[in-house]
Image (cartoon, rainbow, N blue to C red):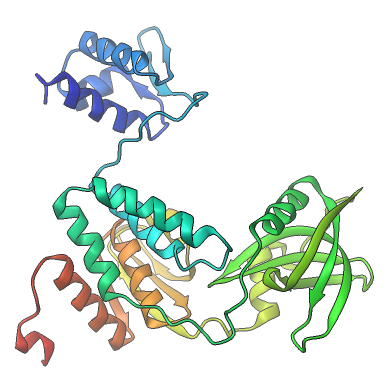
Length: 329
């Protein structure tokens, strides 16, 4: 590594892509080279189009800046697998057009993966299935989603048609405040002008959404948490499966990955966390466990069906099958 400028530059780029500030001495120690060599490698990255900011002085260092174009990304093994898994999950997203785009992206990434990583991704994809509910035929117009997201950001009223649960069509004028994802569903938390109350709207039931140009002063969402408000509004119908996990890491270390799942922290200490996660079916819970396991080792406490699914998945990812005794203890 020390004598290979290309490999060393790629490792340096991988470190800089965390977008943290790296002291020159820290990079020198990580790369096992002199600080002068670090400076040369940084110059090499700049020649390739990467924008690297530097600070001089005794405590000087480097940070990767946001550039005007997208240079090639460098991912380590776990990051590459995580991206591929995430794109595979997005293939089943409920947003019109995203499935095809995600499939194209994941095919490009998998073609570039080394054989050992491609086997891991393929094992997960081929051995995990998701159950699509009979009432999940509606998809979301991505343009409508963009309009709602912009309206939430800009505090602008929107108008549109809404199909209620009983099938009745209504006209709505609302003040959008937040979008919430619950399983495959997208929900809009908004103040309904005509009813003078907070409402939760399923985005796939909204049609002809348009901003009206009238801005509003943001209100306080009941309870102060949009996700909690949606959970209370829609009840637990979308949380069909619940699992309890013990993670071998402090809660602060895994909060970044847990935020992608509906979860509750039950207990945590200096080197462990006990959390409960919820999803629509066993397949999605298994995918969630696989994603969390990329961050830290874990054990499935319950349900037993999920623990068995995870054992099967681990066996496939490891390129081996459980022995008959393991399959039938």
